[in-house]
Image 1 (cartoon, rainbow, N blue to C red):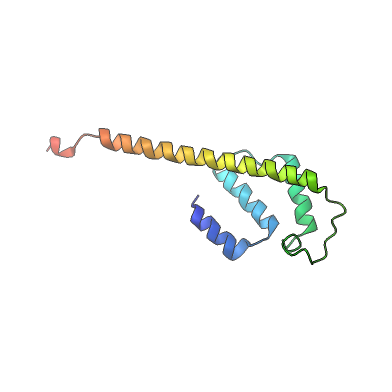
Image 2: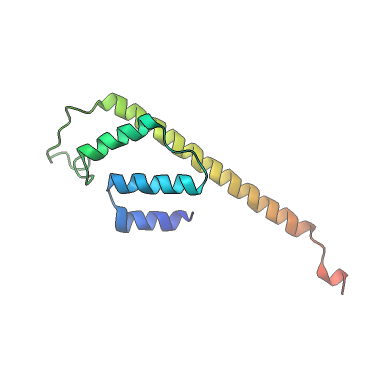
Length: 118
């Protein structure tokens, strides 16, 4: 899971396509062995995708969008929950990566010097 490659792919290919971003998020969470998004969060994202499939209406408010069926306070709360979930997952991945690096450094430091045997 190389962050730079993911960000580059998002800038070049995915862009503001919310459905593609959701598919990517699912793939990244699965690859990291994290549970999927909660159903209520997935439902909120589905509403956003339905309301704005290309990701333009929220970015450019002059475009027409039917907002009558979106509960924005509830949506904001759900997106806050998603952000917390993703950040916690990222923190876990960072901690696991650091622990692995520390372990490898400790193992290398404790390994016998081959010249002691030859």
